Length: 414
Image (cartoon, rainbow, N blue to C red):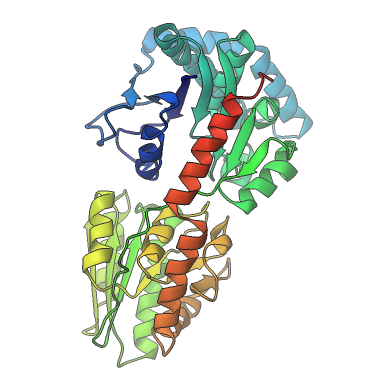
């Protein structure tokens, strides 16, 4: 029996972000049992290529009158007033948190409207698969009550899960909708535990479903000269702490005067020019070269790993889920240095890289760089690649996930 699956995203296949879906969507295209409709909440720019048998339905942004209408709907909704009552009970009833609650509820009602237009065109959905545990997913849960959606599933990552990332440690509507899902797929054990302990979501609803990357047939290569080549990939924003990488490279060079370092940062953002100026001051040394090459297509990043020597991948982010950027580098045999935040410890360990303490110092990273290019450098490279093959292979993880959604569709409506 052919099933209708709607995949609700933030922007994919349109830019920016959600690059990890580029791999997953290939496995949905092979699901001969399903008619798959890809529905980005925001759509602008040139879409990325996707398989021909995946339907893309771009919905319109809310216009001025719609924003007013759904704002009034939010103010008159029990969802909103129950959220204010919750804020009062936890002593976080402030102007900012009330505003966050209002915007979230208004977004739910607009998302519900968007989902309704998809159902009007394609009929009832066997499953609404929401890529984020956020307002679109909550709207789908409301539509399920009306009978137009049989099952609702959502992935849970980082910014849509960890409450401390919100203002005053608050994320709207999490508790009101926690038990309304048929399945929540956490991308890490850390995320799974957080959902259970913080929002008291029953363990029977939550499933561990790791993301994955395509493992290349041939690993990349390390340097064969005396240069240590380092790559980092992230948006140039404060939470990524790229300045810490700059400080660490300067420290490593100062402590090891014979060490030559070449660092490339891939990614753009508001802080890029400031970081380039900072690096030009801190890394002004004949043994150090660096380059900020801006945003690149995912295929270009992978081509760099395949064709250029790379010795170390560095991530210094203050908050993460399980970074796909690290998985991709490790799949080419590049060991990683990363802090113990979110689910990073499930990916990076002392066999395939260096897991930094949460409050790491410049010297921690400096020592890690020297450690990874020592006598055991090939063991680190082999272990990094094997870690991804064993636990983060797209071929394994996404086939398993797609089959999990199929099994969900074949169960009775809850």
